[in-house]
Length: 335
Image (cartoon, rainbow, N blue to C red; front, side, top):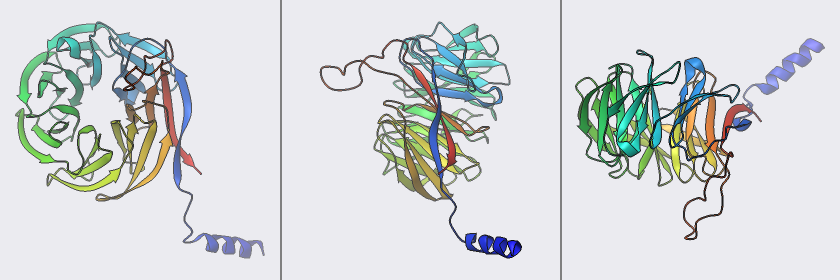
């Protein structure tokens, strides 16, 4: 009888949809400290986060929220690149058009490399063993050898935001003012292709799926554009929240994330390389629009703070209240 009952139970489960995965905030850590913030860059092998904080980069333990150290001497901190081949990190210092090179163990500053106006995002391409900045107002990319020497500057023909390496010697970046993706040959340091992201306008955030050759561009027009970077064409779109500034792709779950200033994290599932649907919109925190994804533990990291009164003109956010800067950890569970 027990065996028959077990067979009947299993039989009734065949073809029944399993509970959909859902994401939620599982931990919050108060990091404190003054100043605004920008990119959150995970260091997966060491489970650390590098967070740009106006005049420094905070280095935080993913598992405990403990501050491990800071990279100082930065004027206008934005992004961080981790060049493990040399043991060096690189942080953009946008206000003085430079990049600060630092030691990945001690976080001590080792040098300063000239870049260009509005040096903003920065990434490391392991295939070419080079670092690429994306200089917004200069419409260029500064290329740096991980030893700390300037290679060249590449004109991009538009205002770059975030980018991603494909692992095959190509680097991609969004051009927000022209609503395009640009492809860079990392070895020859030249622009080889570009294509429009329409109907997605003002692409800023970027993530990549190298297995299926897809790029994800999060756009300020409230759309995520999916590009086939082999053909240079947008093949799919999905709606996202407003004020996006971060994107991520987790190959293990086939989920794409867009973090938005409206206090949401849009989760989009990849049904196939060219088919996507929005799974959910996770409530996070106001202006938690920057994110980092650690693919080894599948955690999404966001930051936010508490703010003072909105400016008299009613636009933008109020000042960051002292010591209210907070790290949010988002993880997947089951309903």
